[in-house]
Image 1 (cartoon, helix red, strand yellow):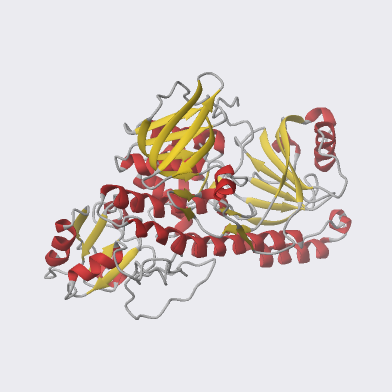
Image 2: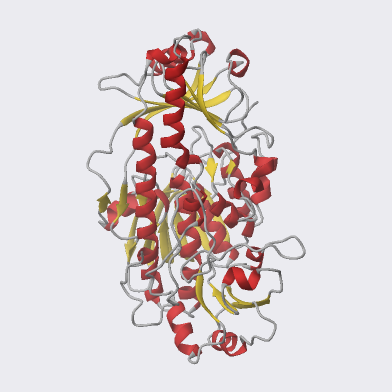
Length: 557
């Protein structure tokens, strides 16, 4: 299969143009930010220094929470029309080596059956969506927003943060230098983040010994699937002759290969080709290296996700090992949290202090994801090469190895509790109701509408989900026949805050939400619930929109 990844739009920019938000960085998180803000009719300029062509694919795993966000934007179904076959298995296979024995397999439904991954707990499910097709889908959706301006081959050289916003200095080889202005700047410029460095924001390291050198390669391996004895899988984890991971990119001959580098080991293209051929027991001529690069993982979170009128999202705010696919998905969660807060401040129905809660809520969550990814990485590192596993007579050793792999590695791919168990329990925007916190389990998701948690999915009579009623506004769910949420709805509307009221009669909805009325935030988080409207509706609106005095600087958990 030929990969066609077209460059993004370039074009000139006008000096002194003013936007609501300038986004620096056009990767998945930057594009997602443009979609979210554009859907709120905010004027957005996204600048990306590269041309937008995906030459080295990463971050293929899109989890359930991210798919729910893509569902709100109307593009979740695009995965079935991407270049990765919708019926290709997403199994994970651990093998002693590619030409000998399989030790363990984690079965997962294909993209076409993604809903089966969540067992009725979500209207969506996790998918395998390589960047060759994921980025173009995001770009097309962002470009469809009339208030979004995408510009590739433009570099953010510097910016000044003033009293009322930022002045951003940009340059292009084709068009020279330009200056634009914006109320806010969102840095989605990656792990090295020049914006974060310019802001002087430090990082909190999860562990002092997490750095390691890895080699990555984008390769073509013609006929690999026909030459090996193992059933098809989206990823193969090799134990011998060295630890190596192969990830499928097109269901055919294109793969991304990664492996740790030993001290002094060369990452030159010729060495990479020979190393892969040796690991796959094939001639060097059967390995075509299309691109390769050395990389180093990390486990750090920025001390703050905000400085003045500049905010960080994605890898600019948190860097984690790609074990479990939490990096990009955590970045998309940043977007959901930040989008409505920027709208509230820019539209004037929320104070600037609301943006302080972005750090308060997202940093603790990012720290949890960094720890989870580090846990997965350490578990994988504990699996060492063992030539005995390739000996036909050593079935018992292979059985024991497979049991250890299942016991220590399954939480990386059976992680619905991690994906949907998002919570902001100590957030100043959440009105706690004193109910007990449910048991946390990285593998199993226990639905709860306890304030601070993701609003649970309930199937509606027409086959849709209650989550489909959440279209980026505050939502009041009326879950009992005689309930009257009118006074609370009026309190929102008097202040000009977008609010939708919905009456839900679906079986089990009242039980799932545990109250007659539930207030859901624009990012799908339960803010408050009760059986009657609160006595002081204005105080409730103040708290959930950041006008309460307890909002500023309070950390989430």
